[in-house]
Length: 277
Image 1 (spheres, rainbow, N blue to C red):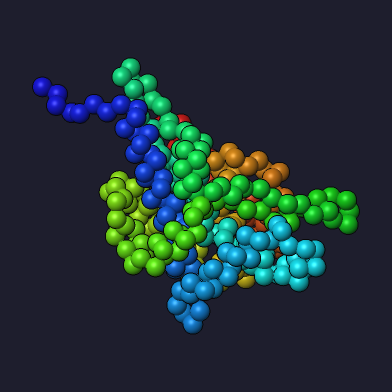
Image 2: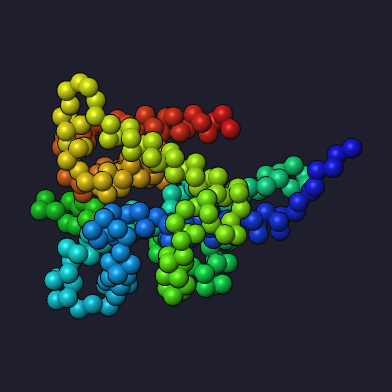
C-alpha cells in the first residue's frame, strides 16, 4: 500500500514563498556581515553598512553637483551592493523548484508570481537589473556599469533588527527556516568557496599573462566577471553583450581572450547538462 502523502500545488507554492523569504534574508542579512567592505577594523560595522545603504537610496534624488562630488563613493558602494545582495538566477530557480501535478506534468514555480506576492505583502522591494552605456571617442558604445536584480527587505527597521539577531549570522541557525532551503544555501555557499579557492590558489608554475592580469583585478571585479560569464553560459546574455561588458573592465588582451574562450567552454558544458536532464 502506498502511504506517501500527496501534496497539491498550494503546498509547493507556499513552500516556495517561505523558502524564498529565507533566501532573501540570507543575502540581505547574513552575507553583508561577512563582506569586507562593510567592516571597520576587521569587524562588521552597522554604521558603515547603514551609511552605504543611505547613499544608494538617495542617489537618484541628489543634485548634479552632489553626484559629481560623491560619484566615486557611489560606484564603490554600488559594486559592493551588486556583489553582496545580487541573488544568482539559478539559485532562485532551485529554491522555488517545481512540482508534478496529478497527471504527471511538471510545473515550475513562477519567480514573478512569488516576487509579486512578497512585494504586495511589503516583505521585499525589487531593484531591477540593468546597465548603463558610455559613448566612446569613435562613436561606439561600451558598458559603463551594470547591476544584478536584487530583492531587498522593504522595511529597513525590520532589516536592521534581523542584523542584530545573532541567529541570522549563520544559515544553519535561522529560525523558522526549512531544512530543505538551508541545505540548498549551504551547498551553494560551499560551491562559491571552492570557486574562489580554484581562482586564488597559486600555481607552482610561472604565471601566464592572462593569470597576471586576473590577479591585478580586485575581488569585486572578479566576482562580477564570474557572474557575467554565467549569464552567457545560461543563455541570458549573447556574445555581443558579453564582449561589451567585459570591455568595461579594461582587461588585457590575453585575459580577455581567455575569458571568452572559457565562456564558450562553460556554455557547452551547461548545454550538455540541460540535454541530459
